Image (cartoon, rainbow, N blue to C red; front, side, top):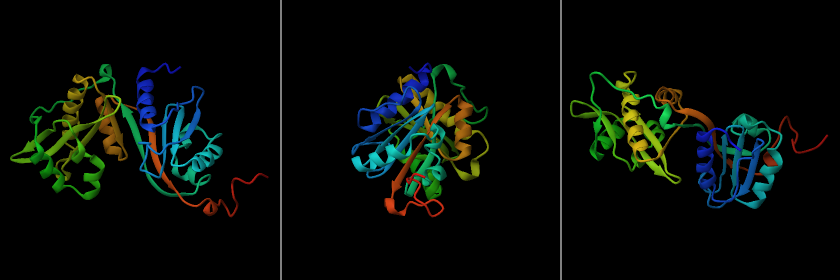
Amino acid sequence: MVDDPLLARARQVWRGLSGVAMDFPADGGVDVAASTGSLLCPPGWVGIVALGDAAIVTAPTDNWAATVREMLPGMPAESFTDVDRLRTVLPVAEVLGPASLAYLDADDVRPAQLDTTEVVRGDQVDLATLLASATVDDADECGLAEIDSSPFVVRHGDQCVAAAGYRRWPERVAHMCVLTAADHRGRGLARAVASAAVTDALAGGLLPQWRARPQPSRRVARALGFRQLGTQLSVRLGELGTLTVDGADPRATS
């Protein structure tokens, strides 16, 4: 039984996204299952989500699930999303992530406000303007193009310089998305617009989720009261015959 209600709810979210009946082992470790409908990763990939001291893993076929199930036991939970460690036991061909997974309980919220700048509800024109000014990597990372909530924005003159919103996931999750224009960073704008989006999500009874790779994004989440509970990683596996460690197959027994 998980004593942390926030961790228990986060695990419920990812169990639902796995597409199969599976669970985070109560005594730690990992549960592995084949799932063609998994939302833990792109189709055909292996999805790994570690939360607390346990993890769940989905694989695209029964054969790959059996291989992963054989290789991962015995590794500590924090290693399940360590790409370098995984490469020693699995033929990793391509990776997405790892990304931290942080969640926010309503009792832990630390609202942010700007003394001289107003956060307002924006529109699609604001988002289009901001995204057009961003690099491709920043636009892809922030996910603002996919939000289905109202955007919350800061404008400088007629131009949107920061925006936040969220996309509704299954299990009543609000997946947070935030972006600040490159020449307006370091002024607390990301925290301000994200705070408004978080408040809106909580008012709708949703669980705010912050998934991020860049450290500046993680710092914004921590400042708002989010707690990092785990990590998500997606891997595309290659041929088993390509797996070598110092010239030897690590599956071989001594």
